[in-house]
Amino acid sequence: MTPRDLARVALVVFAFVVVQQTLVLDLRVGGVHPDIMILLPIVAGVVGGPSRGATMGFGAGLVADLFLPTPFGLSALVGSLIGFAVGGAALALDRSAWWLPPVAALGGSALYEMAYAMLGSVLGQPQMLHVDLLRIVVLVSVVNAVLALPALRLVSWALPEASTEGMPTSAVASGVLR
Image 1 (cartoon, rainbow, N blue to C red):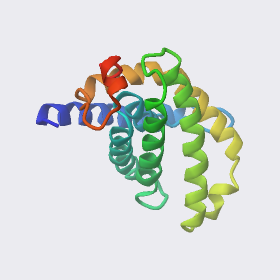
Image 2 (cartoon, rainbow, N blue to C red):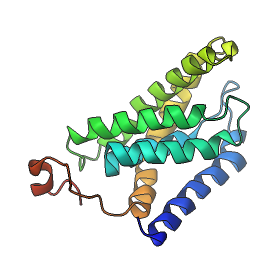
Image 3 (tube, helix red, strand yellow):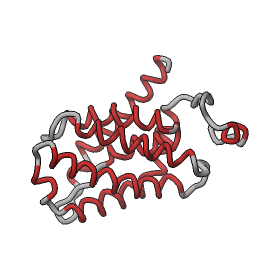
């Protein structure tokens, strides 16, 4: 990655943090607010594959952890896992399909929230499983599915062209990595 690419990624992460902390935290439905930071590793996985999804999940998760009262690194760990999983699943699908980002955001956000609560409970935060987890999963997943396409455009702008090294020849030949 060049310094210009890093600056673009940092700008997108910064924009997401600002929107999350200033606007999204005030949008509450039934006492639950959306979490758009989860979108970063999900759409990075769709755009750039497992390694870029995991890297974005780690970086965005560390930044998000600065604002959370949970164990530091928990968002980074779960974000890395979800970014990697979504990126791996996206490799097996047609990444140019219009429906892939919203479906990936819906499923990835649900998995993220459940894994976050379970790992948080294991790491000494048992109250994370006692909150209304179903309401959190539904709200975050639906909002992120709606915002997936705009987020995909921003992350596609920020991430440089993916390397074709290690990719299946059929994916490279079909132009999936454009």
